[in-house]
Image (cartoon, rainbow, N blue to C red; front, side, top):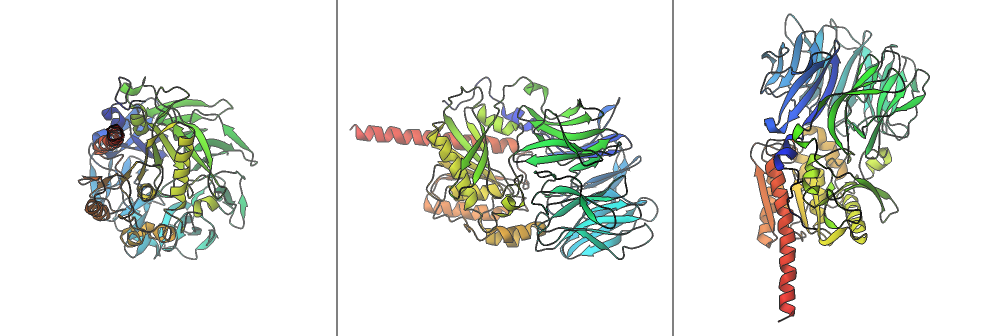
Length: 609
């Protein structure tokens, strides 16, 4: 199959502008709010609001970037108090009116904003630890510390004269060991006599919130899966047993994987492998699945009466904000916002199939295979294997316009849920610790070899691509014999040991647990051309390590390209330079294909002389 642009190809501009990201969906006074990150607007994150009969409007001023960097990945960047809007942006905490200008009221680094008893609650991070703070909505504007820890804190959730929150140590990640605590709370006093409700060394208890019955609900993976539990002030009991992840791995603050409908039912987003589904738990604990057109649901559910707002997508629908009416057994779905623009409404897309491959230790690894757009059932093409970031993350069954950019140009794209991915239970998630750069590489290699054996991939035209932790996987994959002809490493980690010292405080425990496998990427072992794409402002994986590895490859004569994106952070795909990154990646694969073709031609000429 020829790898070239066609009339049906997804344009670079469309692939970038369609990659709008929705996050942090919330309800206040019957109005929905969410964040939109728009690459075609320079990657600025805007607060948007919607009310029935009024439609969608921007609630934050034009050009204002609603974002925080607490725990490196942010989250919980806004709160609504009547007509007042509280946002975290560059410089600190801002207050203002909907659609109007925002005034800086505090320079503190805050996240996970929540309304308390006449005050704003939030997480404040410093080099020395975390604090839960309170900030008066009116009157004297002075921060008050409620809880302090040398480790990490999250999810301050006020209830009936009480406050719940999460805590974990500096030696852990919240998906490894996290605790839920409760203490008496009012706006006039400090926190005293806290009680641990759940969590510990072998349990991740997350996402506490108070139910309409006055009980405290939370997610715990004590069964091997994150499931919903309830504490009535005396004992903890399971709400429903589900063989799936009822919560997302808490990379960001402010996740809401469940919410309470007005009629007493609870709505929950459940992940099983790369798929999500929505379920409703009735007052007796019975679980019913909701039939929806979505296979991917973000961990931001927001109940509105007997309806729930969600961010959903599928292989044929890019992320949407949808309002799902759950009043009866036939849910009605109203789409409030969609990320793809009108120019892509009729574009043909590649839809994936699931591929399950047995690896050397008898495990099964799952991959999503996107064939070239419009290809026949017996397709044969160049293949891009993608290792997702994290590595505690997963590939998702949803429309990815940047993948479509390549499938519409004759490539197949394959996403691999390698060992350590989320969506397969706690044991699978933890199994990559100490094996990073080994088992993840083996899984990606096994998938590539299976596609080659099936005759779908063209030998010499199989590539591997990864971002962040996936970039480390991609680099190690071309530092050994294998099926990959070239690698693309975006925002890549290079040296796990060094990363433990340069990574932001939040992820230091993750780096410590992952390391011990393949070690640093050794330039002397790299055997295939590499494209590095890295932001100069990346604070998660610093660009200096990539520069050093590129210099070492140059000294050895290994082909490489280095695209440094000025003032861009860790998230290249949603940045204002996303287009340049896509162009460079496409050119990289085409150059590798052309070099292989030229080499074959040279060998043929030599053998005939």
